[in-house]
Length: 88
Image: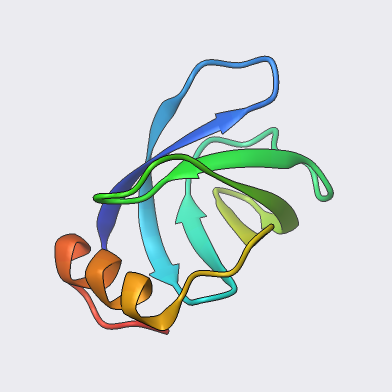
């Protein structure tokens, strides 16, 4: 999957990121550096409002996050359809 999403860190403006994977529990994105593990972020996935998540790992230009409130499977299906990929 390679879709587009938006990410906002506390105190920063929203930026476009590449959505690499998404599941009911979280997502993996390709983005800029400087995001630290444990940081809260807000992600806007295709067709949805911004949702809060926590950074659980960060390596180079990829970041893995866990949703504060997991996605319902049907919502995940809609996001994947809009992003043009298969769920993780």
